[in-house]
Image (cartoon, rainbow, N blue to C red; front, side, top):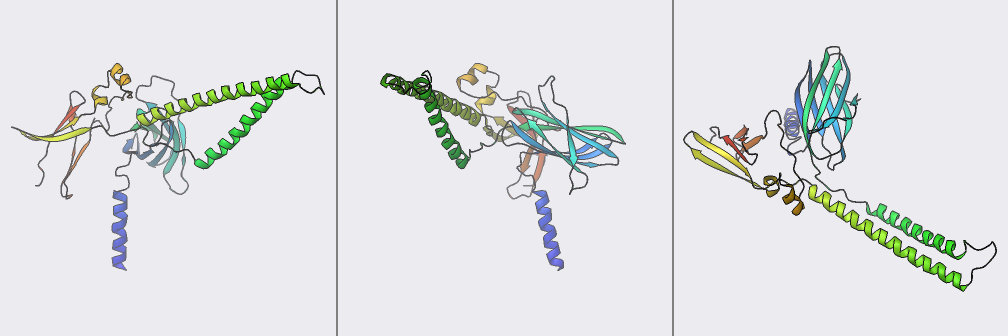
Length: 304
């Protein structure tokens, strides 16, 4: 029984330690004025999209928790903060949702109001589309069938308007009038087909633009450099869309999207984790840069 309890304990520790490894979500743990908070922002997979904001507050007399999203270059017009409601089955936790309207460098500001006063914390959030939602095939088939019904109904209305709409009640249309009605149906069918073709091309263009805007890791390489003071690791971004990010003509010619500037996360532009292949060594480094392309960090003494 004791061995089983130990095994379950180890499994629980592994689960907790690996909970957000590789996750695009944003986490923050620290002070928010007189309160201690843990903030977990669930980033949306598509932009625009809805982000979930989960806040755990440690402190007495909490009266209200709010959250608001901001774009890095916003100068005004921010929406009012959303009120985070207590989570019924998780004491101390509050949750709300926020719309993230544009990709790039965003942030989520969480404010806590209570008897101890007011405090706030800002969580940097990189919002980028990471997946493309597929259209449900069954819904598409249903909408297609409805579209056929509407198409036939519209042609029927056009034919009736031309063939019988101008005649007195009870008068049957002659051959000339019927021929005009069929010609009107044909012209309407051509116009509708052109509109549908234009809509299809527009849809493909929008879908292609969205696919091009999806996040892809930038091409980069790493190397270790030896010098008199020791060794350093050099990270160089080779991605041409980043190197040419300020050349609007080059980006438009290549059909590339403009990348947003870097912003500091916990005061650092880059967080680099060096892990030995066997897991026996680990280092958390903060490379510095002068051009946002080449990042350098001194290597600490690591076991060989």
